[in-house]
Structure formats: C-alpha cells, structure tokens
Length: 147
Image (cartoon, rainbow, N blue to C red; front, top):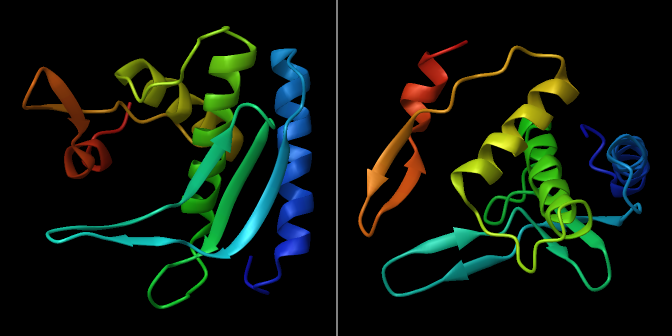
C-alpha cells in the first residue's frame, strides 16, 4: 500500500477474494482498486465512499486514498472495506438475499471476517441505539473492549 500503486494492491485483493470465495463456496467476484475516494457534499454533511459492490456485475470497488488530502488509507481501513464489500457479495450469492442491508448481523459477519483475515482477536461490537429502532456501532466503546 505504501507505494501508492493500485496494481499490486488489486492483485493482493483479488487473491484474498479468490481464497474467501473458495472457502464460502461461491462464485468469485472481480475487484477494482481505485485512487481517491469520491466525496459527497450536502448542505449539512459530507461523506466519503470507501467501497461498493455491484451484484449484477459481481464487482467490488475499493478506494485506496482519502477524498480530500489524497493520502493513502491505512491497511486496516482498506482490509475492513474489502471484507465489508465481500459480505455484500456473500449476502447475494451465498445466502440468496434479494438485497444486502447494513444490519447488525451484517456488521457482525464483516467484523468476524476482518479479524480472521488479520489474525487478530475479535472485538465485541458495542451497539448504541439511534432513532427509529436503529443502531450504530459505538466505536470508542468497541475499541476499548476486547473479547
């Protein structure tokens, strides 16, 4: 990642996805590693797109640079995004879901995959309620708590 070149990172990502697809017994998906993240600016908020998954083309796209400063993202952030998008692929191909929602179960599966891939002990995700019977991960408490 430090070189800033997308080709070696794409090859490594494709290798990871090949192994994971074989393990989960699903068709492999393609991956594109792109430069700076897209930035979406609205009146009262701004978001960066870290990655996405296209189920029709079975394609994962992951961005390796931050949107504003164009700095190379950390390995952990990149791998976390790749695992997250792979979980969308699994929702469609392994589980046959008609859509892939960001549920608590989805984030739990992505976290397990991430920690398994890194060889790190899993963290218990700490959830905080938000409006409308929705939940978000409380990252400060999650990062303080290890299982």
